[in-house]
Amino acid sequence: MKKILVTGGTGYIGSHTVVELQNSGYEVVIVDNLSNSRADVVDNIAEVSGVKPAFEEVDCVDKEAMRKVFEKHGNIEAIIHFAASKAVGESVQKPLLYYRNNIVSLINLLELMPEFGVKGIVFSSSCTVYGEPDELPVTENAPIKPATSPYGNTKQINEEIIRDAVKANPVFSAILLRYFNPIGAHPSALLGELPNGVPQNLVPYITQTAIGLREQLSVFGNDYNTPDGSCIRDYINVVDLAKAHVIAIDRILEKKQDEQVEVFNIGTGRGLSVLELVTMFEKATGVKLNYKIVGRREGDIEKVWANPERANKVLGWKADTPVEDTLLSAWKWQLKLRERGIQ
Ligand code: UD1
Image (cartoon, rainbow, N blue to C red):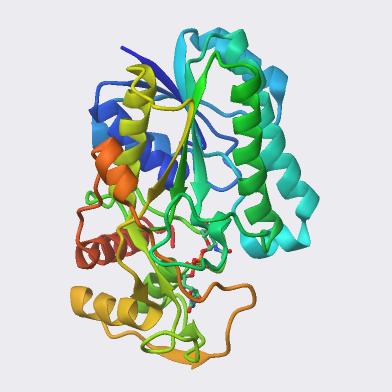
């Protein structure tokens, strides 16, 4: 069985990806410092997939501890690197923390990879690298815009670090996946997003409002240059997204890459406004949502959605879960959290 190291494997996207890797016959070693996730996610992964992954509570910033993980587990074929701090607002308050966490972690991995014969790395990047795109839908060739937050900057810098590292030492390869807006939960309702404190992202805020944990959703702005005035995003189902990682790992290990560093947009190709998403949530769940329109949120992009053709053609991957089903899965997850007494 081929062994894959998944950093941040108890997190939101990481946990779903671990399950898909296991379902495809990979053996997984999770590294996570649990800074934004719970240890019992490992049990839930086991419940979904039937296999308990190896788990090391280690911070990727600690290079010696990471070296020990590679020594202990041996024969790690490839890495999927999710572990990162991701709160945009917090990154503005604590930029050095974000640069240290997100950049040092990656450098440690890139230094350890050749030492342990690791063949490749899949990196969690973001459509945030495009900023406010000049053309929509946005392709991978769109220019990289100056980052609007230290968080966004770490994604851009890390993409460059990977390119430079591979160029200088082509013993391994990389795939950069630029995610649009991941939402939803595993259909089993055993895995999902667990925000720390007040959710900053739209869908967790919607589900927490629907269940009564929050009084009202604030829709940030209805005066944008969009059909209904609210911002437009490309909302991608988290299980669809997880599957893209498995294909990327297959591609690296089967040496199918056209270039040593490849980049793919991972989105649906469909843009939805905040108000459209709210209406769809209400329809899918039958729950009426209390919301009000407020002013714009600083730093928000007006509209962005993917041209996912490259991933469709080259990877043979396509997001195919209907948004309504995805929203329903997020709602079921929220209900399950209450049942478990978590939120
Ligand atoms: C942001 C980041 C992105 C990051 C992602 C996940 C930017 C530009 N984008 O995406 O890089 O990967 O978070 O952490 O920094 N909204 C409301 N009310 C709310 C919450 C959100 O109206 O309570 C609106 C926002 O204005 C936006 C949309 O919902 O139009 C989606 O917001 P959000 O889920 O926070 O994701 P992004 O800002 O797109």
